[in-house]
Image (tube, rainbow, N blue to C red; front, side, top):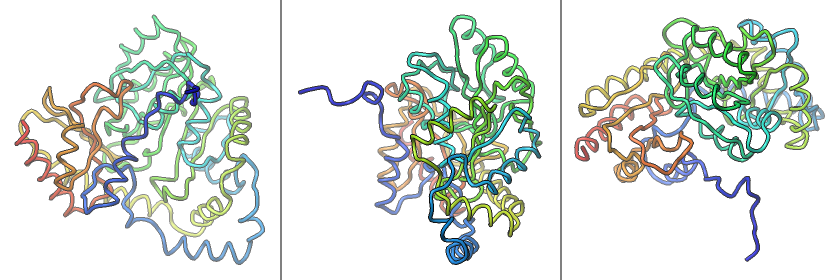
Amino acid sequence: MEKVFARRVEDLKASAIREIFKIIGQADIISFAGGIPDPNLYPSDELGKISQQILKENPKVALQYGVTEGYMPLRDIVRERMAKINSLKDSDDIIITTGAQQAIDLAIKVLVDDDQKVAVENPSFVGTLNSFRSYNAKLFGVDVQDDGMNLDALEQLMKKEDIKLIYTIPTFQNPCGTTMSLEKRKRLLELAKKYNAFILEDNPYGELRFKGENVPTIKSMDDEGRVIYVGSFSKILSPGMRLGWVSARKDILDRIVVVKQVNDVHTPMLTQMMATRYIQEYDMESHIKNACKLYGEKCQLMIDCIEKYFPEGCTHTNPQGGIFILCTLPEGTDSKKLLEKSIQRKVAFVPGNTFVIDMDPPSNMIRLNFSTASEQEIVKGIEILGNLLHEEL
């Protein structure tokens, strides 16, 4: 039979997380697998009123084509939010994207040619790994430590390989939940300058801090336009609205606008207008503060349960924010096989092989999400997982 698929997609595999969603959507399963906010936090009543008002007062704008760069009032709001954290430079601009995933994909499409070399955290976000794979990038993993990427290992890599781009989630990393220290952020930027590389800083969780002190973004320290910054409303407002943004120096952003025009023309006007009016008319900061308080309580509860129910030899990260904990199980544990047995007991998680460059070898890591499940489900689900681990180990 003739060759059907383009080389860039032949080896792509469906996201394990999305495949797990198909399972948990069909059964009464306690899910620690998702990467979504607590649905009880969605301001559905407010957004319902806002959408009705918009469609009554301004339907010709809400239901019409928009400009590729995004709805100007929302862009202004994002600029203000970026300026508060000193992360918008005079040479920069922002555009609204259809979720942060699109912003990441468009930035990669603009910056990375076939076979160009990219450094990624190990482990890292599967959506970005698949974007790199789809553009035939050569990926090199750099281990994540408690305070962020191992920069000694990164520098050794950059001495040997011509790295075009470094991808990082420095704040409440996915899947680890760890935060890169200020010292490492500064050094990472210096390495990018020294070896002439770009940094793609992905920050979807940065506003969800429930303990510790804020750490400046890498973008805020960038004085050469080397950092492309991606943000999102998915974790602080609603993932279903599909609203993200990308900030970069204007020549890079101009190219991103062109490829977005090819991709989807523009992000839907209605959801952009809804987000704008919500931020203008309601207390967004209180909404985020409430989410941080709830997630802090859920995170501590999950950690307490892990330490109570999991067997000796299991370790876990201690996030200061975000929505994930990474657990490392004893050597020899295959988390993918463990998931199959866990699903039978009505508990879901994401196995660690999902988050690495080579997804085939077994992994002894599991990612647990604490934002979605109720407190009762966290206690019950972690106890079930703990019992399973005791049996297996």
